[in-house]
Length: 180
Length: 152
Image 1: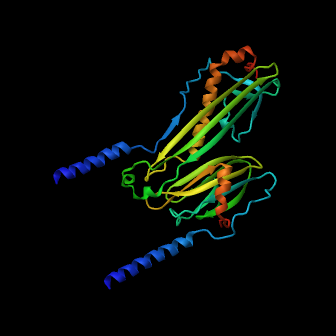
Image 2: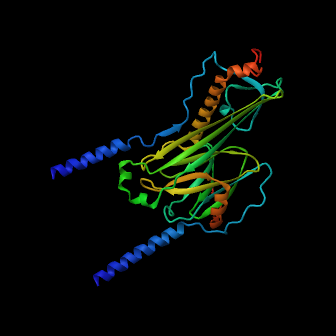
Image 3: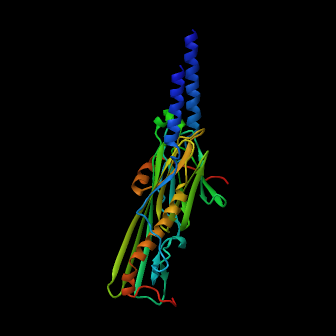
């Protein structure tokens, strides 16, 4: 009897440890490095951006009416994936232990095109996947919060890849002058 | 005799349960596609396929932030509502014991489909909102009936 009681307690403890923190949001993205001051690239041109908030626009892009020969187009797309709970979840005792019941995903697609009248063209395409699992006790972050987090990560990611190609843009005269 | 009474009681409970649940389903005119959208606006269909699981849970769908929001529709199982949205970021949310919220980038002339479902909760079913593609939305919404707008 004593052994059975101990086994029950052990099972509960193992379950709690296993499922603890299951509602955290996981982010799938290549590591984004720090953009140092010396490596920072600010590109000047006509910036075409159809997003509704400027905070999601990469900080390395500057709209410059004097640079009509350079066209910079940034766009993003957000896709939601929400798993439905099943009727079986109603009878799953492990849910009471905190086992995840389903997963939500937010996929952010970012695309940056840089073109000049002289024929230079470069395109960047990046994808970030953010996933969260939910338990019966917590739904975790909302899709609105995850979307915002993802769009800011995408902005930083684009800034990072632009900083890696700094010399390319310097050679084509796309970097901003000090006065711009 | 005792057994018969038990059966009778069970039947009564089931009948009462079904009657309560049927009162939670949406009633109204069957789905009809919106053919004209006001200039400069987008059409956002908010719908909830009829399902037994969570069918008794009813929740309001709101537009805007929690602080500055507007209730659009009381979303019942098997119902839909066409919402004309202004271009810009549109946050849609709903809440029972937990909150669900998603944000859309709306452009004039868009036609979007937001699907509501109910998931397992601790005390009560939890609302879920997600965006589905036009093909899925157009197919699933045909089974729904028109709901009336929420009263603020």
